[in-house]
Image (cartoon, rainbow, N blue to C red; front, side, top):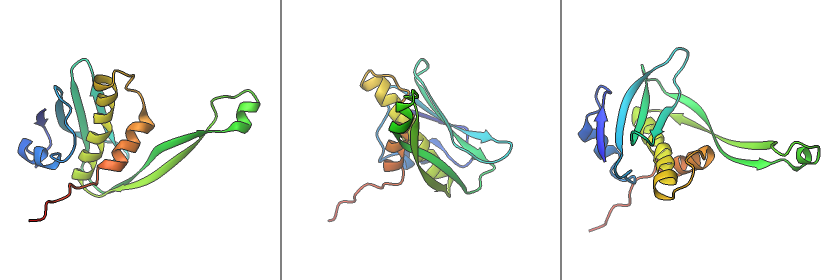
Length: 148
């Protein structure tokens, strides 16, 4: 996977080391860019299947922020009986992003799962809650170290 960074302080070598324990999006390019925001920091990423690019945007200026991540939905049966089959109860997890590294790892995991669904499994890549579940599960994990 090719990596390109426009984010100050995050060289290609540093990004490669940060993402070493995460799965690779073969044949895709990872771009890490700053995200200029108006009111407050938030998450922004994109998986472009045509250009074969995963773009991760990190809020600048960076400050710790909390994001509400939807990871599951359950259909509400009471509403379905009244003719509304698309009523859901959403389940959320509030995640505190303390560092740029956490933002980059979370967004990469999220966008990697879009890539995986589309390029590897041949399905539609628009499964936001599944992508969020994958990212929540893996972005803070560290690899097990071998004991000598």
